[in-house]
Length: 119
Length: 459
Image (cartoon, rainbow over the protein chains, first blue to last red):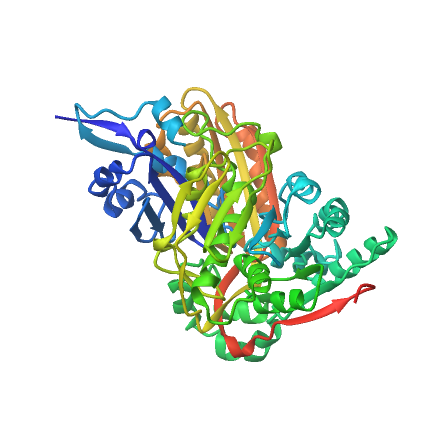
């Protein structure tokens, strides 16, 4: 049996951009959740979740603290040539953190207080 | 200079808050105050301002920053480095020299130039702007709505990201203030440290240390609680009084402490620094600058007390053979149109307007180079997936057309939706702006000549 939790219950994120590429870092609050997310928050999962926005490929690199997602051709031009309101795609981290993460039913997400103490 | 050098971050882009820099100038125990002021678009926009006679081509807040910070910095022995000279660092230096003299002060002001490489592209444009350019651009993900001929015939600006050496040379010559155009953001920090510790050329690990310092300070409040809080799990207090970061660099220990002014607002922790370490990085194996290829994989970040974060583990390898150029050109006009809906079926009504608008355009306009239809800034399918029935929706149409008159006619004809759209549609916005995209190119290092010039009374 599994249930869904929201990625923002497990990790924080920061979005940046270079040209038409969006770069989203996802950093789990707790180091042990890097292992959990490795098999779930894959490049393929992010690619399919962002399929209506990203025209290019999604790549993922693991760092000692989390993951960097490189979303190619994701910004309709980006800040140098863009057509969107949020030309930098700054708000895409908010969409990323809304993703559902399937976990075992007995899985406990860290409490808000627990996370605040780590921040 | 001593074993530990302290650098304050004065700004992270041209329109950044001025007050936190003023606080550092007045109260920071720092050796350098570095103002980073150039995002990707900034220099090209400054060139447009020169062309249109709006200002001399330096940053729009440069004068205000210097009015508030320069005298305190000179009095307290803090050296200033900034790329806020933007498209015209010489004019910025002349204004500053004049301002200082009016205040009875003289200073050694250095101008770093050589980043403007438009002449190179004018000379080589027939070889460079060929259909091959599509492959070069595609590799960098840039967006090219036009053809190579349009670029060749409408070159606006071309600025290379300069390396740290000319900035260091200016400091070595005794400059109190160094004003540059396009210098890579971290390179200004590398220059300050390389000068202070007399680093040797090719000491890639040291240059990587300077680059990490630059990366953590180049976005000002990004390391100290700006762009961070989620109003729930991630705290930031007194954001109105945010303190910009200070780096204390220990050259013997190869250790950096990130801190901020006591009593300032924001939030500084291992987590804020980690977020910034990951910011706009494609790969932790290679963070590429004109000075070095830094390997962030080895960087370790630890809390070292309240408002103190320790950063160690600096590894770099040889700098790249080519340098990056941003080239801007005139490609037409950008039309932006918006219309808002509230309440039940707001998205359905917005989608209907999108369809009707598209059909009307099919009957009239035919020179649209590219366009997007957005609902709360998302394409149709993504908007529906995000929330099928939001209570507020902004329909936005953004397009590029070659001709100004046509752009203005299209923009005006959108306003008819006030009377002829779906119920409750309001807040119509229409605008037409010059559309100058930028593309990234590379230039051989030997074609670029960074240079230093001293100006004014203090030389």
